[in-house]
Length: 278
Image 1 (spheres, one colour):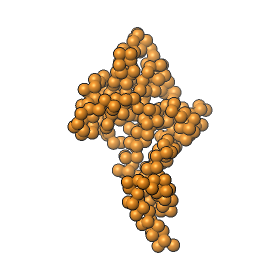
Image 2 (cartoon, one colour; image 1 turned 30 degrees about the vertical axis):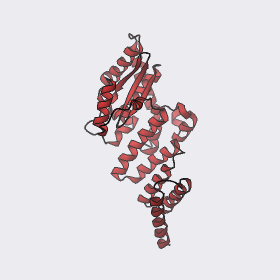
Image 3 (cartoon, rainbow, N blue to C red; image 1 turned 60 degrees about the horizontal axis):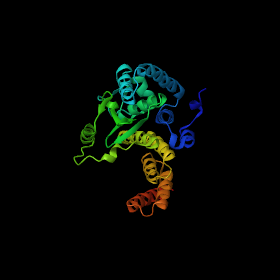
Image 4 (cartoon, rainbow, N blue to C red; image 1 turned 45 degrees about the horizontal axis):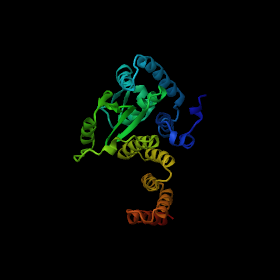
């Protein structure tokens, strides 16, 4: 049995620290949230096979610039990974096992595969979390090269990135160069999980939304808002005592929160409900 099959999302997050690999983390949270029978090692092997084939495709290319371009061409043309424009909000787009099986994904899941293959090939790759759209970069000596994983791996200029932000988020102001700062691995995983949380909340699938929130809480234990959101999800799911406990913990940790009064009122309503039940 491969080591990843013995791992849990919690053990992976705690052992890896800031060196967390988004692809490995993504396979583990997929198993814990929605695919209990998933064997992550099967997909690790598939990623290794893709990397082996990519290594041969990149062999003729000597510079980082041409290797980054060749990897984009290989993944999004030869392998056939592509953005799911017809079913963008399908949660399967956020699970790497499904993305690899179906060759369909959203920007961040497709980018996670580029990052993993690039890492295995020794390329200085990084994720870039633009508002509303995730892209990848190769940190070349002459400056980063940016690629849009969702749109066929096309190379992007800074002006292209500005257009992506406008189309994806509706933002109409000046482009902020800080949006091009490389995104740490743990933040990439958090963004993947937050996408899933939004999908499941919109679907009113409280159990799956709770499972996502538990992973987010493990990944970001110092974010008190996760306690609040988890409490509200448990309330939606009918677990009133647990919801009340989590909201109490949030209020104790965040006495100066801007939403303190609103959360306290929700907590008080829960307590009144519990009293009537008794």
